Image 1 (cartoon, one colour):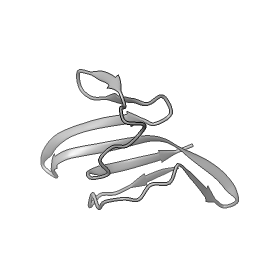
Image 2 (cartoon, helix red, strand yellow; image 1 turned 90 degrees about the vertical axis):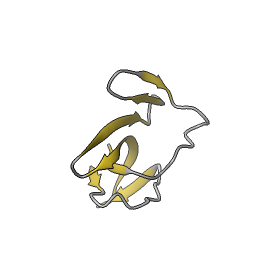
Image 3 (tube, rainbow, N blue to C red; image 1 turned 120 degrees about the horizontal axis):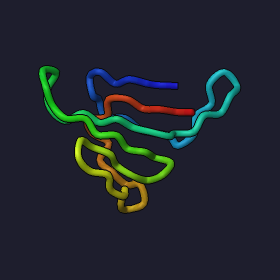
Length: 77
């Protein structure tokens, strides 16, 4: 399942959700920094605890504590 947050409101994420009697686990997050006319996207691989941007892959630090601003898409599988 994919949820989009086009207005980039601050989200309160749950690691697990239930939808139509099926449980889904948070697996990825895409964040967007910038305006609607341009900017930068990064992908957070929540399962493997890594952050991927245009040129770097690095470990997600602080035990999955990260800024919840600018979240654009959330992936549950």
